[in-house]
Figure 1: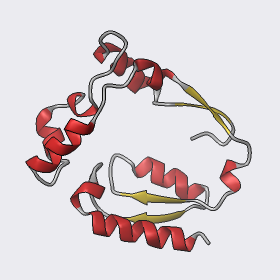
Figure 2 (figure 1 turned 135 degrees about the horizontal axis):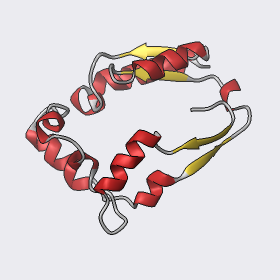
Figure 3 (figure 1 turned 90 degrees about the horizontal axis):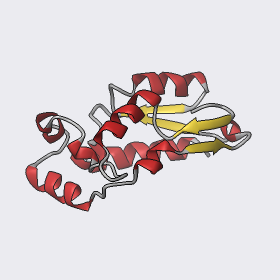
Figure 4 (figure 1 turned 120 degrees about the horizontal axis):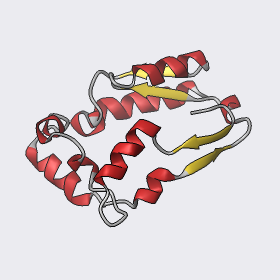
Amino acid sequence: MPVRGAADMVPAEYLSELRLKATNGRVPKWTEWFDQTDVAGLFPDEEARRHITDEQRCLPLAYYEEVVPVPDGWTDIPSGYLLFGPPYDSLAAEARQRGWRLRHVPGQHLHMVVDPEAVAGALADLAASLV
């Protein structure tokens, strides 16, 4: 996220891929963007996968094409970052450079579904460290 100016909703390299996936101006559910074997590994079991997949909506491509204004001074607010692991290591490094508090709960993209207690505990600890 830039310090000032504007932020793309998604990085340009992902946006070009989403444009290829779009049909009638809508992007498929995000679990359909990737190889299903890889997606399945993000969920603790098939029931959780089915439940979360059923709740997803096909969002308009325009949502991902948005450019969001970045408010002045947002980086002056005490902030934190909860890291599960790759591929978010570079974002965690950026957070560290900004002086943000960091917590790490080893896991993958949907770790809050896999281990909600550990994630909630880390978020509570992180929030408490900001006051």
